Amino acid sequence: MAVKYVFVTGGVVSGLGKGITAASLGRLLKARGYRVTMQKFDPYINVDPGTMNPIQHGEVYVTDDGTETDLDLGHYERFIDECLDWNSNVTTGKIYWSVLQKERRGDYGGGTVQVIPHITNEIKSRFYHGTPDGEDRISIIEVGGTVGDIESQPFLEAIRQFQHEVGRGNAVLIHVTLIPYLKASGELKSKPTQQSVKELQAMGLWPDILVCRSERPIPEELREKIALFCNVPKDHVLQNLDVEYLYEAPLAMEKENLAKVVCGALKLPCPEPDLSEWREMVHRLKSPESEVEIAIVGKYIQLHDAYLSVVESLKHGGIAERASVKIRWADAEEITEENVAERLKGVKGILVPGGFGTRGTEGKIAAIRYARENKIPFLGICLGMQMAIVEYARHVLGLADAHSSELEPRTAHPVIHLMPEQDGVTDIGGTLRLGAYPCVLKEGSLAEKLYNAREISERHRHRYEVNNEYRDSLEEKGMILSGLSPDGRVAEMLELRNHPYFIGTQGHPELKSRPNRAHPLFRGLVHAAAEYQRQEEGFYGQSES
Image (cartoon, rainbow, N blue to C red; front, side, top):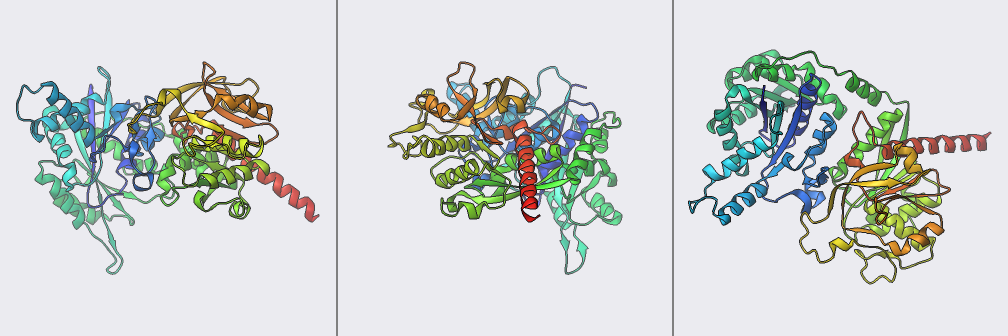
């Protein structure tokens, strides 16, 4: 079969769910026994999203090999349960960077460098790079932005050329578009879809399949109209209705025969899928036996996508524990020692995620102290772990001005300091400690029990670490540094004695959690929160009697 390609574009407006459509297709094809890989092509000129503000762009997702990528790759990995790499996220910035480096080396022999053919050739080369040599795979490639955006035009032209080179039966195009509902007239309107397809056709691209996003079911006569005016078969006009839960999307698209239509367009067999595990996971998601409220204490809460993987990982923990996880968004900038009890009253668990900069750190420290002193289940991730160290140093070790040297360079007690290999680094893009690193867990620790392993690996994205000069003092006062790098130099995880669930990790476990395979730390947090709730209810029940 060699490699087959599926391109996914979007039209009319952004936010239609191209990424979820692509990820759902990946899951459906994998359930049929096909090997699947996925790529995201983003038209922005940034080399990667690593230096972009989370409030503007959402979270930065990190792969095992240390590539900072778009959050859509998180959806891809969670849906197809495959680890992606640097080939999986390509930006305009990367394309131009590569072309300019080649020009400087003289690779073009002194010729004029132009968008066509040099930029488009570079883009096409990345299509090929997305699949390992000699492997039969279906490569699903999403193009960010919308048709008509000037930034997207080189990518669309590259797709046109690529389809011509490999043949339409080897590279099909799915176009995700909008069918709006006008409440005043009570009608679904197809004109935006028609116009979007015409934009594609003007560029020499003819979509093979239309996935129409709509809040109302699309009647047969409207499908026929869309098929006629957009020049696609009627059974290639598929509706994509809103679903209650994100993970229902593959099942909804299976009902629409998305995989069947794609396999037909690629001239591939379409066996019956094995979706039993996925259906069981969705069933557990939709039929919880309890509910727990967990607070996320962060500074980017205006845009929940800034913590997308954290939120999804909590859901995964809930699925595993048959519990619905209700999230309380707590603005770290508004939390103080004086109001923390009021702001976090009633929550059964507290999670402090990663982040950068001084803003909101004192609120995070106050929340961590509240969790520690009141025996509320706690999980600290990256900066969350570092602030747990600062909180413990201040209020248990008695080092009142303890801090991270990143946030307070003049502190007399830098319990968190710059990693030695980061000294002298001036560029901020792509220079953090990035990607998967091993960790050895302490025998008999809670971490070892949760992971059921002594050696683990987590993805990282940080520049600062626990200062080893304070490790002995921390452990003497009851903190357990339960995870260390294999050479024992870097403290990777912490926990507390005499606390039901107090875990900190320098890694980002949210990047490895899957809906059908919850990460142990998130499952553990949800389990501990549910247990805390049961004990609390039992206490109040006894008091009333």
